[in-house]
Structures are given as C-alpha cells and as structure tokens.
Length: 313
Image 1 (cartoon, rainbow, N blue to C red):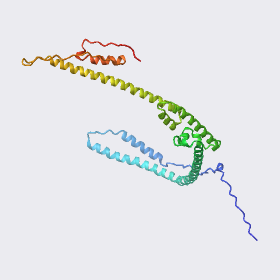
Image 2 (cartoon, rainbow, N blue to C red; image 1 turned 180 degrees about the vertical axis):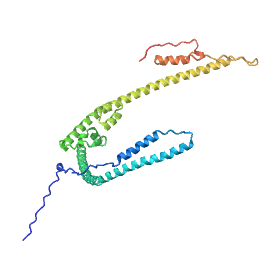
Image 3 (cartoon, one colour; image 1 turned 30 degrees about the vertical axis):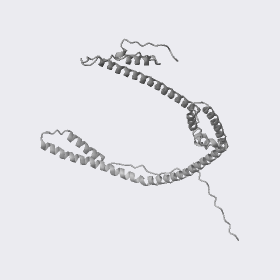
Image 4 (cartoon, one colour; image 1 turned 60 degrees about the vertical axis):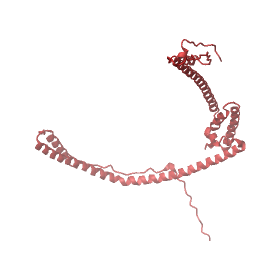
C-alpha cells in the first residue's frame, strides 16, 4: 500500500502584519547617596578660594596657589569619573538589545536590496525588449533614415517611447514612433528646400528633431556671413585708403627733401611732378569722416575738402 504524501502549503508573508518589537525595559533609577556631602564640599571650595587674594608679586604665594589648583582639578575629575562610570553601566545594559534589533533590521534590508536588484533587472529586460521592438519598427518604416537620425534621438525627444506604464503598450509606442518618423521626413524636406545653409540646418535637426532650432541655426549663419562680408568690405576700403595716404606721405617727404639748398656745383634739380588724383569710395558717414580725418594729417591734403556725392544702395 502506497504511503500517502501530504503537500505542505506555504502561506505568503503578510508584510502588513509585521510584528512590532515588544521591548521590555526598566528606566534606570540613579541616586547619589552622598550628594549633600559632595555639594557641601564644593560650596566650601567656592567660598574658600573666592576669598583668597594673593600678592601676585610674591613667588611663594603664587606657588602655593598653583599647588592648590592641582588639588581642585583632582576633585573635579573625581566627580566626572563617577558620571562616566554611571553612563557606562547604563549604556552597557542596552547594548545587547541595540545589537539584536540592528541585526534584524539589516537582515530585512538585505532582502529589500536583493529584491530591488531583481526589479532593476526586470526593468532593464523590459527596456531592451522595447528598444528591440522600436528598432525593428524603425527599420521597417524608414531604414534609410536610421543612419541620419538614430533611434536614441527619438527617445530623447519623447521618453514615453520606453515608458514602463502598462497603459502604454508596445503597439502604442510603435505608432508614436511612426508619427515622429513621418514628421521628421516632412520637416527635413522643408529644411532642405531652404537654400543656403540647408545642410547645416539639417544637421541640427537630425540631432534634436527640433525644427525651430534648425531655423535658428540658419538665421545665425546668415548673420555671421553678413557680418563677415561687412567687415571684409570695410577692411578693403581701409587698406586702400591707408595705401593712398602712405603714398601721399612719401611724395610729400620727397618734395620736402627737394626744397633743401643745393650745392653750387650741383645742377638745379627738376621740381617733383605733381598729379591730380581722384579718390571715390562708398562708406557710411562715420567711416568717411574717420578716413578724411586721417587724410587731412598729410601735407598734400592741406586746404583740400571732401564732400558726399550721393546716396547709394
């Protein structure tokens, strides 16, 4: 006859009914039996030394007071030693209970930590499964786009794609990704039809999926180009003006040198030849004023004038 085997039913742990530690202890009762005697002795010390006034110039009196102070300190240390012995005895009585409760707490904490690691592993597995699902969906919908816009960019833009919320299923995540891919294709078409700096704007968009950021990049690059062109034109005009001014100074110096007295044996020198120059340039009033101010410092420009001809676009 076969022996009957009974299965043991293991009841789950009801964490809501965790037993609270029932700690039985008796508050210590401490009595200093000779408190009045010690207090009287301390009062006598206070009275005696409160009435002492030594001659600080008398070395013997100073020595006696120093020796008495050493004895005073011994009395204070004796009182403090008694307090320390009392504290040690009281604290020692509860040390065992403290250790027992701390050990139990640490054991429960260890269980908490181990279960947490399992939850973290489960979350990571769920995340990797969702990423695999999204990657497959991306490859099926727009494989050529994957190199330009990695899947991580979509997740950074919309963290909900990897949400652990049970209401946001994998199918909903794929639908959301498909919508974002369609928006990206449409936005990139707009960007690449933008003409100059379209590549730079597209680079920004592929990193952020932010159309506004891409347009701001175009504006920034256009401003930078205009500033460079303006600077280049101003620098060119200044270089020309400085060169002409340098030539004028050289000519003036040569003319001045020709005025020096000639030796009698030296035949007369031919006067330096002078020519009519006309300088035309386009500039703002402020720049023209600065340039004319520089030119007037040259001798050849004395009693000369400069006037604005007309406005140019």
